[in-house]
Image 1 (cartoon, rainbow, N blue to C red):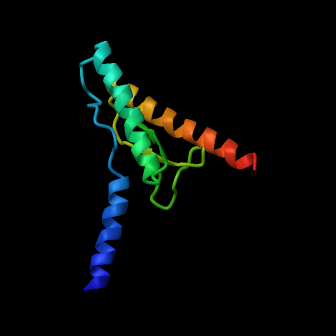
Image 2: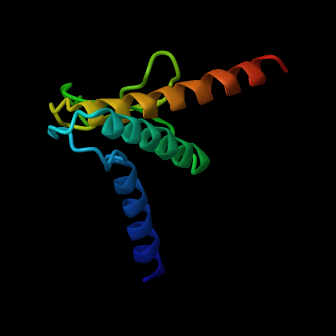
Length: 118
């Protein structure tokens, strides 16, 4: 019984990482500046929460998903690439995605430099 509970928890944790962290609608027609600014802030905040919880990834969209045996990684950071599986490119969606990835890359850049200088 305990083994089932532990296994269920592990599967839930893995599945949670595979869910899109973005809240913007990839097909939204709301392209006004306040919507874009709000999306940028959400992306940075979401990345900070993921970093704090130890979830490091770079988000992509509209790209083919590799076979399950492969785990693609970002060349610059070594972080796992998470394909969101959408072709939508609304302004808020892209602004949130770019802000998220920028925060992840900035964290990597500053922490890698600190680690390399020791």
